[in-house]
Figure 1 (cartoon, rainbow, N blue to C red):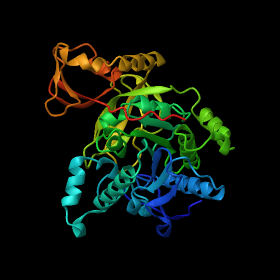
Figure 2: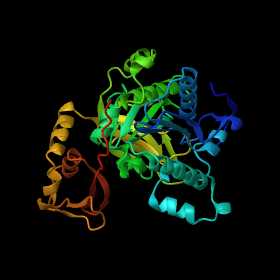
Figure 3: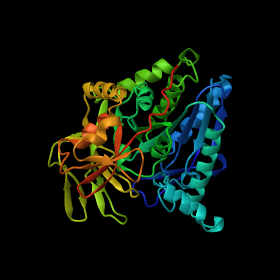
Figure 4: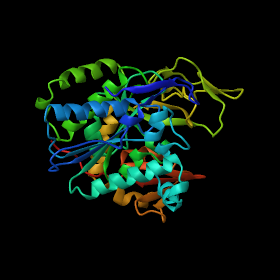
Length: 401
C-alpha cells in the first residue's frame, strides 16, 4: 500500500494525511493492448481524498504482478498532486470546479511562472488526457474516484446517458442522478460534454479503511463492464461484489438530486452532527447553521454529501428516490427521438446560444417541465428568471462486452 506522510492539521475540519511526495506521480500506470476502449481513471482530484490514488496504485500493481493485459487501454492518473502531498482539498482553488472553457482559457493565458497550483494541475491533466483520447479510435470512459467528509455507503454518480447507465448499473452501488447539473466545472462534466462516457464514484468517508477498497472494487468492475478484462481473470471479483452489496443493502438504487444548499466563500456553515449519506430527513428537519441562521430541509428526502470539512462550497444536497419505471420510460422515449419535436411545444424554443439547447418559459410550460426534459435526456444548463435553459446530453458510446 502507498505509504502516507505525517498527519497534519490545516483549514479542513478533520485531521488530514498527505501522501508521501516521492511516491506521487501523474501517470500511476498505463496498461493494455490498445485494441479496445480507453478507460481513464483519476484518483485524488481533491488532496484530502487519498483513497482513490491508493486504489489505483494497487490495481496497477496487481495488473503487473498477474501479467494481465487489458483488451483496450487503462490510463490511471493522479489528480491534484500538490494538494495530495499536503492532505488538503486544494491549494488555491477547487481543481474539480476548474474544468470549464473559461477556466482553461484563463490558465493558458496566465504566464507559466504566475500560474497558481491548480492552474498548473489543470493544464497538465487536460493536455495529457486530450492527447490520450486523440490517439485512441475507440470509445472513451472516465471513472473519477472520490470520497466524502461524511460517513455512509459508497455510491456512483453520472450524467444520465444510456451509455453511462450501462456502466454505473454494474458497480453494485446506488446511482445519483442530476448532481452534475448543480456543480459546475467538474472533470465528469468536461468528459460528458465532449461525448465521452463519465461515471464518478464516492467510495465512502475520506480516511475510512474501507473507502479505498470500495474504490478499487469500482475500478475492477469498470474494467469488466467495458470489456477490458473478463471476470474469469479476477477471482476476487465476486467477493468485492458481495461487499458492495452488503454495505449498500436497503438503499435506493437511483436517487435524483432535487436541492443543493450552496455556500459562498468565507461561509460560516456548520452541518449538524451525525448525518451520513442517504440519511432520510423530513421537511423542516434542522440540518445546519449558517452564521446564526438555522438551515432546515425544504422537503423530505435523502441527505447527500453533508459537509464536515472546512473547504467546499456545497453544504449538502437532498435527493429523492427514482422508481425503475421512470428509467424504463426514459429509455423508450429517447429511442423515439422526440427531441425533434420539442421546440413545437408551447413555451419551448431553440436556444440561440447552443445548437443542442432549448429555452423553456416556465410561465407557459408549467407542468414539471424539467422532469419531462430529464426523461428525454436533457440537463439543466441554467436559468434566467422564468426561462429555463436545457441542453441535450451527448449519448456517446454504449460499451459492449
